Image (cartoon, rainbow, N blue to C red; front, side):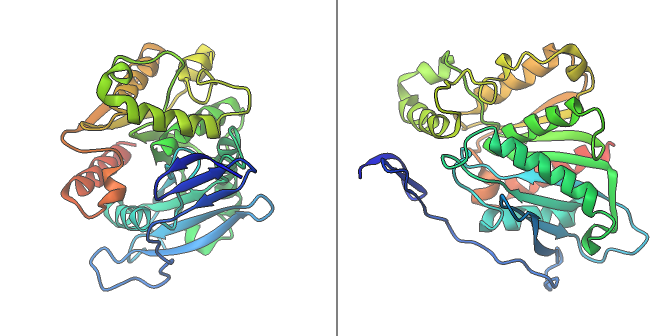
Length: 312
């Protein structure tokens, strides 16, 4: 048994198929609000016990019975191979976002590659949208959910998932809920053709890491022009783009993936999506809001996301 792929401190994959994951600090759900001004509550839910797919719901403090709240469905990052709703960075950022934006947040734990390669993550996360519809009338924490104001978001691979779930909701003639917008944070896309930044000498380690995660997550026999990796290869018809919800793409100035995020924003705009905005966090690195969810930059991101949702 030999080690065939590794992301130090996070993931090891062995030749016999064994996968070892090493999670950073995690947080349990908090059913009761804290004394903090942002006193959000959270609880874990089962979306599909057979697969399994789970999630964590976040509620802002002091929700009245008459108040209607928008819903943010969030997909964590991690190259499709690592990550969880329980990681402390996600728990803090999304809980405080729920309080800041006065929204219900559903953070989804989908099945991970390489055990479950793409498109499994897309299917699992779309199932979360269907669960939201089905549970709205029976789940007490969704009683104030306004399913005509649902937003999709995620970081890195999760941003990639948000795009593909949005596509799937349009492809389904009857969408379970009304998707008003998507917020893609530091989106993770790729292609067989290298970008200028990827060909620079200083980017070799980033390219190597990205290639490893793509190799572990795309279907066996596929390359980086797989539709889940290269958005230009999806060949979506005009009717999909014409119905696409508003898009806000967040990139970080020091992020190796910034170039791909800019390319995505330009591509969807060129294909007819009318409401597209690109937002850059200058001087910040990849997933800074997860690494330091209480930083000024993370607070600003929460404010920007909240303002985007309030437009609809």
